Amino acid sequence: MSDVRNPFILTPIVPEPFFCDRKTETDQLCKHIRNGRNVALFAPRRLGKTGLIRHCFSLDDIKREYNTFMVDIYSAGSMKEFAALFAKEVFSRSKMLGVGDKIMRGIHSITPKIEYNELTSTFSLSAGMTYVQHPEKTLEEILTALDSLSKPCVVAIDEFQKVGEFTEDNAEAFLRSAFMNCSNVTFVFTGSISHSLNNMFKSPDKPFYNSAVMMTLGVIGKEAYREFAIRMFRMFDKDVDPALVDRCYEYFGGVTWYNQLLMNEAFAQTDRGGKIMASDFGSIYDAIIAQQSFSYQDFFSRFSFKQKALLVALSREDREGASITSQEFLSKYGLGAASSVQTACSALRKNNFVTDNSGKKVISDPIFRDWLRQV
Image: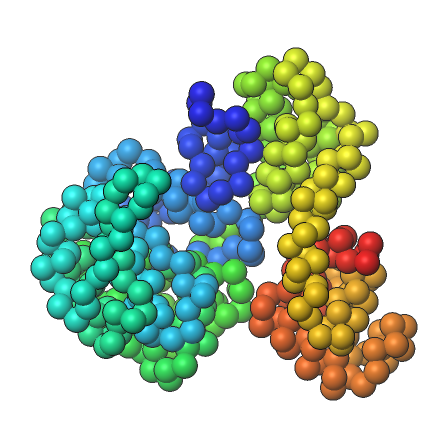
């Protein structure tokens, strides 16, 4: 604990004393792993699904009994990119787990690059896309190598719905066959777009139909988060007004990452022995917007005129969003033809700046939305 200066940690790797609640979800996911069940885990972005998986992987019995791997494929658009990300994780983790030599002996289709980290003075193995010429063969070799290890493996693949967007038409069918041929590897597939993940695993015409148990992650309860926040402040000889915790929680609908972000700043603004009050919410949120302002300005400057106009218009609407092609919305903000607005929206959705909400469009990042209101 001596190395932790702020207990409201914003990265997915959270030490046990600073991990908030999720006992039911932890028990459930660990039970699935111990019973060899593949899991399709859905949660909206920033709700903590990656943190939950890493928390489960860090538990003593899971670490002792399983080899665990975590692959984020959000940036992948093809099987080649998928294979490169998969290989990089397996190479880097297998050495740490003490199975690097056995993994290397089983993979012949690529030669990983040896990299030197000057900060840690250590060597590591990695594989970029240039090293993956035959992605299907590479994946088959990696999975065969994992399947042959004495300890069972658990492979979590984050943002798995991206597979449905790969350039190859047969990506889902190939991966379904490759994964299901493993007898010693369990998979956790995560996704942040519910209809996409649900369609992949519950539609009879899809290759992954009924190949995993479904699990959904909701928000942490307000009372549980309030108790956690107060306890974290007191652990470091500080205090927080419960009403401030509740206001932060309610402002972002209980979404974990935003809860942590606001409490992180509140903690930073509180002196040892001091107490921060609900009336300080404005200064906390102003500081957060100021911290994000440079990156938001950079993003905004790259958008087309129509994209900027649409974003600013959406920021003026309520949190439920707006029907962007309705005549009322178009006229209210002088946006012109519905077709051009739809084109602008498609690009913004592709890059996750705008998302769907029951037929309406909303700005994905509520802090970005509030920043836009100042533009």
